[in-house]
Image (cartoon, rainbow, N blue to C red; front, side):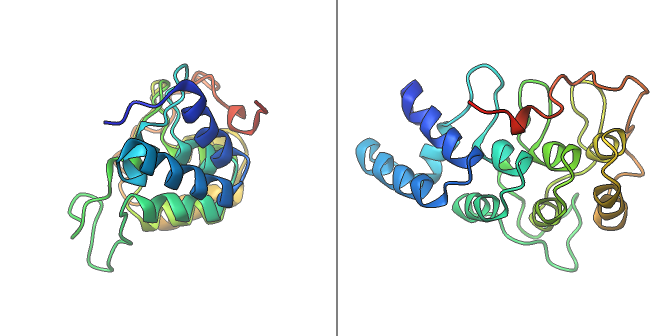
Length: 186
């Protein structure tokens, strides 16, 4: 794995969070050349030291669909085929799709708790698992419900698979400590 400076990592994370696609692309290309690695390896190394958030967490949490699409493509995520299931996809999703941050939240958790329906659909289409539980024992559906994101709830219930097996919420609202953090400014 690439070792980035704190500033290099912060730049990548900022561009993903701030919806700066051109800056994100050029920074990744430049760092890939500097470190003699692929842009996806550089992107994978850009993790927030304190929260363990990836660029995909920030883009999804802020509803930046173009950045999410770029990051999924960059990491080689393939759309699920009609015959695929989450437990048996023809092409498994790259680790970034279901990567957990320090609180156990995936990018899908963040998109759900902020009600970003188009991002939710894109993540699900590329193998995001809605049944993943965060550190508080909540799945993405629970995060959408507790944050009153009704359209996100509807989409997750319609499009998400595996939710019938997930625990969901345990009644301890707000335990994950990250509601709304994705929208915070640097």
